[in-house]
Image (cartoon, rainbow, N blue to C red; front, top):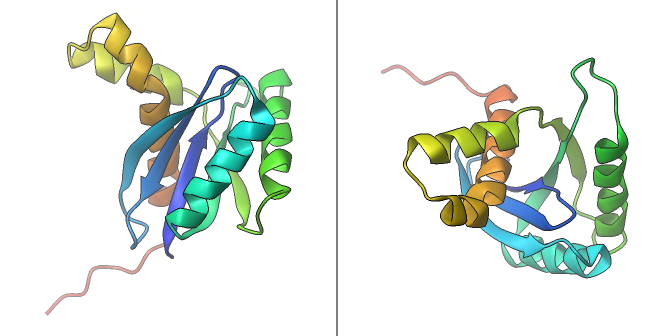
Length: 144
């Protein structure tokens, strides 16, 4: 499968996560400023290429009824900016509740509000990517 890059797109901050080489485990990576989308797209492509990513997974914020709202359209537009700079395939993944789940995990872990703000986006990216990885068909464990 190769390494995958997960993206939690936000207009202020863009969270990134990366998978291991086997495509099994997602790990939070970093947060890129989102206030200049074309520059952020270039920076993310640089990160993806430096880490030899084989696919980019972008969280798509769906409405509860499964339809796409304004936030989903912004994520799609950001994907188009990334596509201008790379041939790495991009795939969308339903990200409903990823940021809420990340925020709750940080609260339960006792993280202070200022610390949560710094890490919630890359943790949300990790959740999106891990859900994607978990949904992929894999080889069953070999038995001796």
